Amino acid sequence: MEEAAAAAAALVGGPGPGLGLRGGLMAVSGGSRVLAARYQELRASNDGDLFVYDCVTANKRTQEKGQAGQTTDKASNDILAFAFSSSGNYFALTDDNKHLILFCTKPSWECISIRSVVRRSTSLIITAAEDKILIADKSGDVYSYSITDPQAAGKLELGHLSLLMDIALSPDDQYILTADRDEKIRVSFTRAPHNIVAFCLGHKEFVSRIFVIPDFPDLLLSASGDCTLRLWEYKSGKEVYCCHLNSISKPDATNNDKKYAVSRISYCCQGSYIAILCDCIPTVYIFQLVADTQQLIHKQQIPLNHKGWDVALEETGELWIFQENKVTPLLLYKPMDGQWQPVNDDKGLLKMSKYLHDNWTVFEGSVGTDSCYRTLYKASFDNMTTYLQKKEERLQQQQKRKRKELQHGTNGQNKKIKTREPPL
View 1 (tube, rainbow, N blue to C red):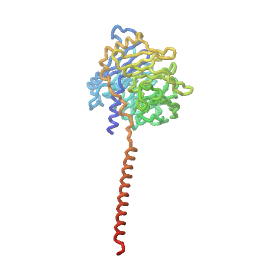
View 2: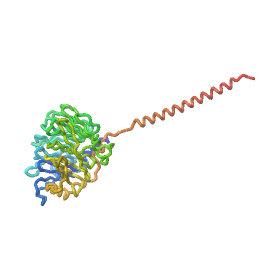
View 3: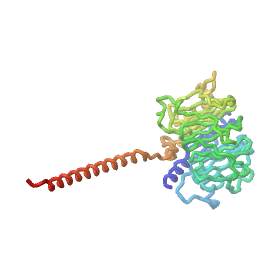
View 4: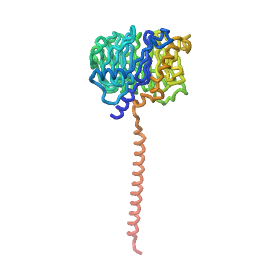
């Protein structure tokens, strides 16, 4: 129980600062704050279009209103998870103080509601219909919260017996997929989550990320602490492809025996490209999905000089990388002749980099932090070595006893022979 609690605490501490893109909007989270702006609008002369929200504000507002469900333990206001809606009209986040905060982004950013959630979240997603927010929490439950009624309380939808790591939806909102620490991916009907359609089983460690391919809606991409990417026909639970990341890592990038997890997945429909970022490895991997053969083709590795926090692919294929560096917090790569090349003079890049540089205090608390996945790996015990050692000790003790018995028996026989010698 103590190990599970430590794992949950490590995870809900958040996998670090995050980056999100949608329809020309960029949102970046760090600590208790989220910074957002339209990076494709080039008013970079001042901070007039930069929106900054601090979750400390939400805590003060809920205390003033006397809302129920406030945390009694000592908690931070750090952002744990966030997501844009598919249109970019809505943005939702949860924090360490068990708040769900909903924003409307158009025509300008505005906080619509602040609600209390039951437990600290690990992941959230907004439905394609943009009528609900689904939140997965550290206790293994999924709650839904209405967008159309932004003050309504949450509704319990389903539950696992293990810590939930990620949540996904099919593009038509018919299926809800949940991944947990115990290597399982569950597929359920959204309208009747108690009705389980299938399990996707095959990972050897916790499932860190799941993602339904939007233009191939029958395929699911999953990543795990077992250093694999897997493709599934999730409605039947059939695994169709497995990629071992250790086999494509450069020798100087990682030890093949070292365990690491995929912390971020981003997808671009144009070309079916996938960008992934692994925990504790300063490299971005780019794959291409070949749907006809249901395979992942490794295309490129982009080495980083600093720890990568997040990655995001635009619909045009441009790749944004958010890294742990104040001078160059953002990197931009554009596809050219089948390879992603760095771009340094993009106006949107310069604009957003300046915003992040000027507000770097937001991210200082995340610099140099340990992996949030470290405590989630299964503990291994070498019982066989101990067993063999004890077995060898028992055999040696048995041999000593036998030698003593033989020696004692020989001495007894000699004494009997001496006493039976005939007289002269």
